[in-house]
Image (cartoon, rainbow, N blue to C red; front, side, top):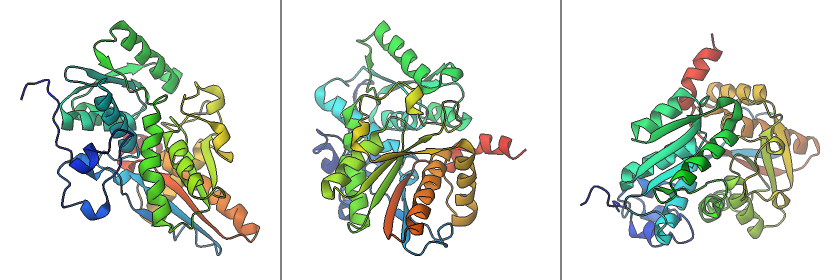
Length: 336
């Protein structure tokens, strides 16, 4: 095989259904036809919280354990979806370098998939992302370009555009903020899984927003099944927040795939509350996740408390975005 040839070790189930983004293979097929680590993206479990919700009588709160994907985050779904679509359309072909901006998790997914499928990856990341994220993408062989930390994810977006425009024939740029295959991955996978796992009982869905793909795709699917399901975006409460990967939308470049008219509301969360909940999940539920998951669960509990006070019954689901071990250096500094 030539050095620049794409490696194809995906199962037929995944490859043949990739035109409209990634479709996780049926659970009963896993372990039989799954022949690549990439076949195990999706079909993550749904955890019910018992300790932090012990005061609730009528409201159930669940977390979709996306940190158990092979690359360690929910972004595995979108990255594979965008890459498969790029291969289908011919935009990503042997010799091209995948280039995109990322706060970390999508970059890790790109790098993992690039290593598995045999193409080069170049990532623009804000210089203040966790050390672990940078080292993980390098471990997979990706090239990292650091952007101004004070400009956050928007600075990385603009720098990635400059690099792409300098040599557009060299690069395949998925552009995760404007690629509908991002949201489609969640319409195809995350949404159906949640609806099935709750046996259609879900009443509220919350997702933190960065690219907004998880919120848009999952929310769209759930609304298609039952228009009464309420969809909420979770965002930092100010522009100078400290929750990696999330956007304060009013002060940011809005993603092209974001359509705020499709969700029912926004729940703002303070950085300190996200950090505190991340710690509580480890200590009280035995679940080690990142700060964005802390933000999601804090918001889910605020909503649960409001519904409980009204005497309403509800099934709330949110996303556990990534693993806690990606923040060990930051956690160590915070504990000093």
